[in-house]
Length: 272
Image 1 (tube, rainbow, N blue to C red):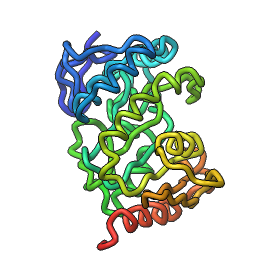
Image 2 (tube, helix red, strand yellow; image 1 turned 45 degrees about the vertical axis):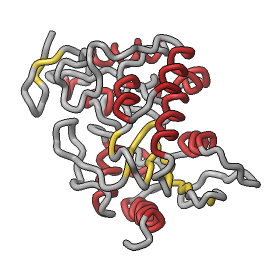
Image 3 (cartoon, rainbow, N blue to C red; image 1 turned 180 degrees about the vertical axis):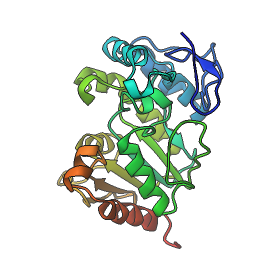
Image 4 (cartoon, rainbow, N blue to C red; image 1 turned 90 degrees about the vertical axis):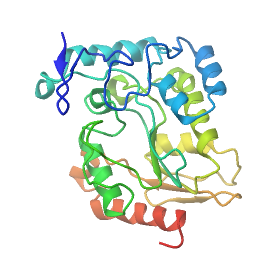
């Protein structure tokens, strides 16, 4: 059954077929589809630009458990979104193609990015994240609602280490490893421009340490406000994940988010 997109009114099925007109869809019906870990690695290694990479990420079907979960969620839906189509596909990175700051999270939310098609969009975590990014001048709006809302990045890119919504927000080690070449390829394409990585949570922190091919001894430990300095001058900043639980309990506050992202902005652009 097709349902109208909440902003554009265009009808879409759930999951959304590639190239059918969803706002911001980077893929076409002819975009190559990775169906196993070997194909993920091959396509990721061959991607020569961010547009190609995002398109191939958005149609990946390499992890059967994750594909089944994300598509089941897209059909069953949450009651509050029952009259909307769900993206139901992997969430590619979003933002500048030559960013100074990379914001790295764990994985898309089942009723957030898996519904809207944009990473960290349409859920409570994204509400907190983009409000903080706006307060620090890194995006043009405090709200990230859907892929057609006009949100624009100012020198940042936001991505998840795992690109599909996982059951229980917990990808398996095999799923993490299968997906990792997509992040490695993204890093290869943006690395010359990035000055700061902000890791949202311990999982993202470990993913960032694997990503950066520079050794630090002792190995930096994650914590909110943690700082790791690499020999090249790249900076890794730790930040608690802006989950509903962390914000509700006060483990993380808007002020704490502002401190981290203000520091990221300062280190990425000392003239600010």
